[in-house]
Length: 403
Ligand code: ATP
Ligand code: MG
Image (tube, rainbow, N blue to C red; front, side):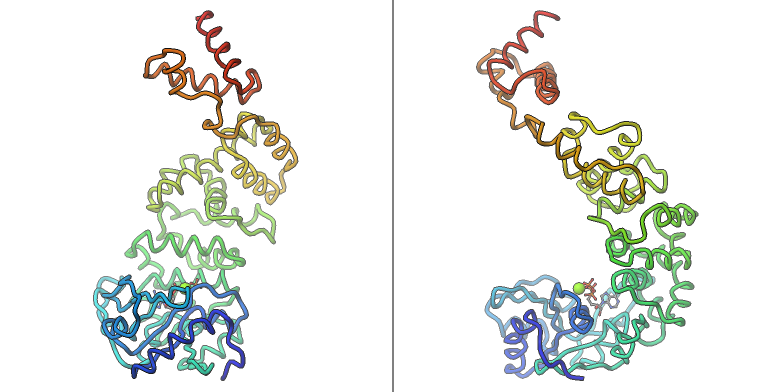
């Protein structure tokens, strides 16, 4: 098969393929971008595979960065873009069902394609637009089918993350999983217990964010893969409810909202403890907790100025969006109104600060100063005091008298 028109992302990267070829090596576009072009989906990263070894690749291009040279990957900066160029490789030594500890560079494209997870991810494209399809990936693409490259059981045993990737691609592409591949995923799901949580998080997160997340999640639950994920063992009913309580067509706005919905559906109040087990970043834990806690606040009462100020408009919109998806009463206009009525949106917008209190009002640094600032902040937000220096001074001085 030949692509008649190359999308602009590939056009832009064509000089790179040509330069590698001129230096006497082979080079192809590979992986997700080739799949996505054929599916007419937007492309993100354009990955290139080559027969040149990393040092050889580096000698061809003036601007390169060693991003993963031990795995054969060199980042090339060309034509205003960044391209990962990876030497053809096999991954022959798998230790303990994880990613290989050792990769061997090879000179054959087919060897490289063989190590890839699913046939639709194992397509290559040359500079003339020819598709190289060693494993019937084009046929699977047409049938919207995910099929492991080679013997499914072996491939999942080699790297059990592929089980998770299977659910993830079902979710992003909306494909069905070919029967033998699915049976193998089911049987090998237990090996997920051996995979690093960080790698699993990335795939699960992509699954939740995907257009067909219900499909991916339903397959994951059916395969009982949740038994081997942090704090999700025995939670299949909650996970099923997570889908049942939310409108069919709903997709999540962002990761934090997706994970917050998971927390709410699982009845987990301490999102941080849960997300710590998933080894997520502190910032992510904070973002999810905010959504969860405002969601619970909204179960009890309407949004007010102080809660909007505390959580921020963005979080409030995400919560309202979730409520709407769960067929609960929602009020987006109120968020807008309250936000417009807020005199300040952040404590840095206060007309005074700690330095002012010390320099102009002779206060000493310490916890008391912090308390006063908090009191002023609250009063400004609630509209008790205008956000003006004189008014604030008066408010503080009166407060002192009353104490
Ligand atoms: P996306 O569009 O979400 O980035 P992708 O197909 O590009 O999807 P990546 O995780 O970026 O997926 O990986 C790039 C390519 O590397 C895949 O298409 C696949 O060929 C190969 N690959 C990645 N991870 C694995 C793995 N664990 N086992 C086998 N092949 C893999
Ligand atoms: Mg990719």
